[in-house]
Amino acid sequence: MKQSVKAGFLVITAGICWGIIGVFTRCLASYGFTSLQITACRAILTTLMLAVYCALREPSAFRIHLKDLWCFLGSGLLSIVFFNVCYFLTIEASTLSTAAIMLYTAPCFVILFSAVLFHEKITVKKCAALVLAFSGCALTAGILGGSVSLSLFSFMTGIGSGLGYALYSIFSKIALRRYDALTVTFWTYLTAGVGIAPFCGLPEMAGKIAQDPSLIWMIVPLALVCTLIPSLLYTKGLTMIEAGRASVMAFVEPLTATICGIALFGEQLTPVSAAGIALIFVSILILNIDIPKRDGQKNVTQESSDSAR
Image (cartoon, rainbow, N blue to C red; front, side):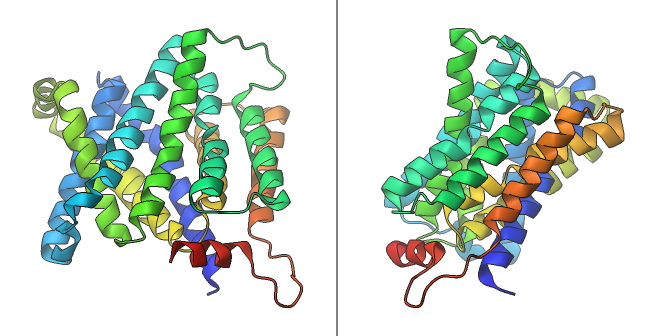
C-alpha cells in the first residue's frame, strides 16, 4: 500500500473512532459524570492500558531522555488537558455547536505552525481542503446560516480549545523524530493523567463506579476504542504525512459524530447538514488525490520528511 494512502487510512480511522465518543460520554453523563471526570477516565485508563501492554510487549517504550520530557508535557498537559478544559468551558458559556466549530479551528493553527517549524508548504490544495472542511463543519454544526453570538470569554476559550487541539500534532511530530508512536502516546497520556488527577474528584468517581460496576463497560470502550486506538493510529499516521494534512483529514470526526447522532439518537439531518457532510468528504478526497508532478519535482510529503531528518 502506498505510504500516503496508508497514512490517510490511519488518520481517517482515528477520526472515526474519535467521532463515536459521544455515544459513551452521553451514557456516562447520564450517570452524573462531569466532563472533567470523563476526560480523566479517558486519560488515566488509557495510561494504565498502555503501561500493561508496554510492560508485556514493548518495555523500551518506557524509556525516554529527560531532556525530551518537555515534548510530552506539551502533548499531555498543553494539548490533551488544556484543550479539554477550554472545550468544556466553551460549551458551558455558549452552545455545543459553537464549541465544536471553535474546536475545529485547530487545522488552521497546525498548518501555520507546521509551515514555521517543519517547513511544510502551504499549498493551494491544502488551503482548499481546509476551507472546504471548515465550511463543512460549520454547516454541519449549524453555525453558517444561523445567528450565533459569542461573548469574549467563550470566544477566547473556543480559540484556546482549537489551539490546544492543534498542539497535539505539533508536539507529537517533534517527539516522533526520536521516538516511535507507542512511546509518544504512552508518555502523552501519562502526563495528561497525572496532570488532571488532582482536579477531577477521584474519590467521587470511584464511588460512582463502586455503586454501579456496569459503568466499567462504558469506560473501557471510551478509553480503548475512542482514545487509545485512535491516538496510536493518528500518531503513526503523523510519521508518514504532514501534520497539516493529517489535521484536516481528522475533520472526519465531526462527520462521524453527526452520523452517530442521526442513527442512534434520532437527530435530524437537514439539507444544510447534508451539504456540510458532503464538503467534509470532498476535502478528504482532495487531500488523498495525488496530482501528477513534472520530472524532478518532489512531492510535499517527501520534502517534509527530508526536513525532519
